[in-house]
Picture 1: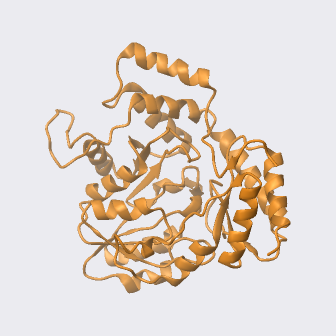
Picture 2: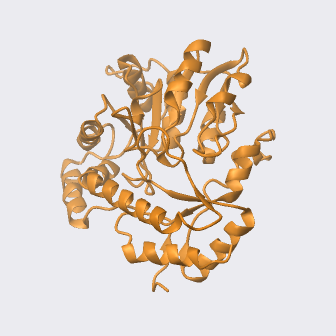
Length: 363
């Protein structure tokens, strides 16, 4: 048994001295916020690293989603997935829109494109799929539907920095992609997020919305919010960005190691990676039944290992804030998925230990 608890994730952090060196510059400049030089540098360097046209850094991934809805001036129904973190739905509701749930594919865990059109009404204005666990959605099928019905597409790419499709960052698909730089993500700024679009006008609009709706002349030209990232958060992002390639490679290796050790275990399944390349942000295991999941979860916790039930329960079942819509696949998958510990610098011995614990649990 490990001496210290092994949690589902730990933040990927650069050496402290490298972060402190950047903080000294912040202290000396006296600039803490308001689109400071480090925020601008992070946006530039991250866009270069990912091969994208631009990146609008903001305070968190939820604000990024809300800004995307605001920038596209959406009012009406937005079709989304129930297999997600509650923030996806919260952003839709905060912006005065109505979430409409489309069930998911049982193998990829992503929104099922074959079920989208039946949900489109005269009030539908957009589709908001989620690249679940960094696994790219069927963006081609979604694009066809959106164009056919004149709908906007916002991708909740909270998990998806580093994921690609057709040689491009997955963030460049849709009208706008909103991503997260939260501490649990492959690249983090502690708290943070960003918006990405290939549309230059939308890019400029997102920057205005981030700063209370101000344009470059400080005139208020539209509704905005305080979505500004601080220099302190940007400094952490810049320090961590140097290790982006190492973090991605490390996660990929451990993901594949888990798969190698567990794929022969009867009663276990894994997320299907059909389209593009994921970023190996999570290692979800699909159990034959919820009871099997609970048995393994308890056995792991007895051995100081703490996995996480992402995403349970299925968001459509939150009856206190939503009108219940039954979604059989999402509810079933949510009850049977357990994410195992996977993070940068997680000891290989710990991965092997966790895999062996699961192999030795009677299912």
